[in-house]
Amino acid sequence: MHTLEMEETEADGLTRHRLRVNENGEQRSIAVLVRAGKGPPLVWLTGFRSEMRSVKATALDAFAAAQGRALVRFDYTGHGASEGRFEEAGLSVWFRDALAVLGAFVPEPPVLVGSSMGGWISLLVTRELLRVAPHRAPAGLVLIAPATDFTEELMWKRFPDSIRETVLTTGVYERPSVYGDGPYPITLRLIEDGRGHLLFGAPLRLGCPVHILQGMEDPDVPYTHALRLVEHLPGEDVQLTFVKDGDHRLSRPQDIERLLQAVAGVVEQAERRTAEAARRQESVATGGPEAG
Image (cartoon, rainbow, N blue to C red; front, side, top):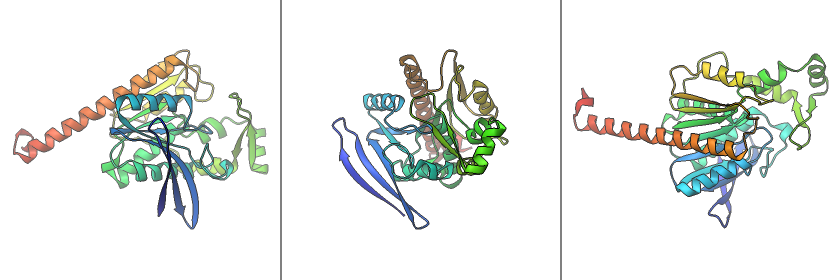
């Protein structure tokens, strides 16, 4: 059972919440920012060691405000304003954080906007909701440098033997960061936990439009990784946009503009699909051509 507390309404119309997640006798507290508005709601899923008030997330919120559209964003356990130690969490916890937030704040099919690790979690969330609650499954996905299976494909398989040995013997490797936010603790727990959520190797049938944005000069998630993901999306409405001079974060003004255009496009597709489904349902109910 989860409990919800509203902390404060900010001057720009955002409300701050605390979602207390209770699992197996333990509790963790997730910080959530909510902007009320029309659907389909947008949900921002941040990247590894990032926060919900990042440049891209803030730009997405301004976009939502201008459109009168609902937006939910949150910090995973051990990230930003949420409680918990980063080193003690992992994909399982962060994935369940996302499911808990969606369950508490998003009653209708959203458009998920996932950056880096948030792209992987967006895919996991979509697959799970299609399985257990298809009426709430995402209406669309916008993925920025999606780091699908990154703990295995982009970390463990690429680590030299010396780093693997460090992880195996000490339990952690302090990976230097080029972003000036200190080293990232890559724990054995993170690697092993990630293996329970790997997606590559089987088709991913998501049932909604997908738009992927990928920088070709990304040092963390190579553009070939995005191509590999597209190969796992058979028969889907998938767009892949390469940014030739783009890095991993894609946070320059021109990158932000491209992101917002992609979100607007996926929202439009989602709204069109919803309207078409409603027309088909009405036609069946009234005995029209669709009924036969």
